[in-house]
Image (cartoon, rainbow, N blue to C red; front, side, top):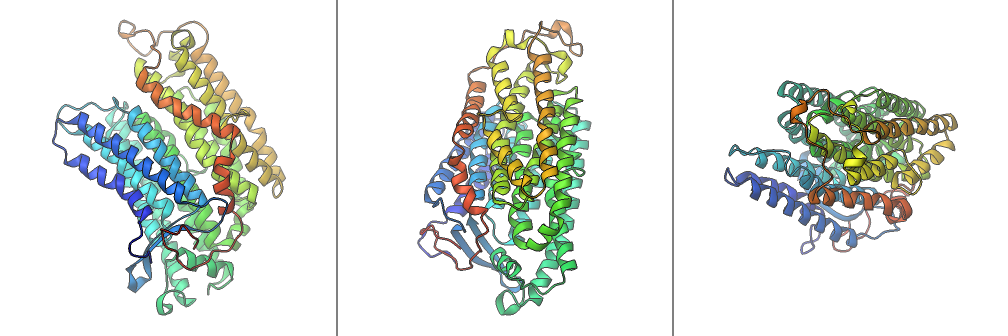
Length: 529
């Protein structure tokens, strides 16, 4: 339990956006500008707090730090248990950096006519941030599950209630998103209950009545102390993995992502792809590997095969897209394949690369999707054929699109290259064929990015065939607000491209095979658990 008098660093971290979300909703109608300012200010405050948390975290050492532990439901052995490792810290910083950027990017995406639409939109964005942050620090499996599922609610309303798509299209995409993820969550709930029963039979928890403590379960799993057959543990593993694969998403449970991404606003789509979906791959690394090490090793070849299919399939689908926003959505499916491949390579290099890839993918996808969104908002069409010669009219926009695109294809010198290289090297030592096929797919990423840039940005200016010619205006370059949105993303891609150790120094110890110890440490001492 956290000692009295110490600062509950992680509780404050996730509560800041949660409370701000409620405050925004309490603002009177007609004060859309205030709602935007309060949400942006709260997100910046959360970012500041995350930076302070990072300074309290000791790099270069494994285990969990800044622990908080309070009995929650004693009858079930459930605790309000929070702790932070290096992977969680990297993803927390990604989340808190991206949220104010996304709020600023979507500053004008939602209009308000006194009906509180802006209030609802920014409150939902903050709610997603809060629940994602909790998911990265929860070390009680039941607590994690609650927030893993709860974040679907605000994202469902973001997809169904906001965006340029017609209402019917948004509604269908939102329902599809919810059904896929709820089904995965129900499978995980069954596995969670089964895991609790196994922990009870194993004599874990208070008086041997069972527990949801990740630390207790992981130590017992690594020592072979779970009283269950291997077949039972395999089924429990598959239940957890399926839910995380849907959230990630991984082929073949990926089809909800492109529809959802193109139906909502670009900022909300990035919140979903670059932030929320990372919970799925993060959970594979923490819960699948930590709770079911033997099952993870048993199923790793099959999951690696699925990951390779996802890599190639996403890239091929991206090449065939006529809609630029849908194209970028399919690139994310391909990149999530790389992340999953690194996780189940079960090597230090592969898992370090996978965790770093989660951060780098967030930056590159945010930059590419937001710049494309800025362009589409001007013309009102997302069809690639409706654009041409943009680099002559908007050189800054075209330049940032190119840099973000080159990052997406993992050009050396930009952040994703290092993470992709580590994943491929780490995978090659165990599954050389999978690594070779994944590396070969990089050629496909060069095709879809460079071909898209050539069609949209170069050549003569082209008028849209789907927009009234009389209503079309020349493409404008990025304004000051849009430059402020894109600049930190491009800087992040460049800095992490040359100095990946800034993140790897925290990630590497967290994915090392060091055992998890159970004693809780005061949040003020920054120790391990």
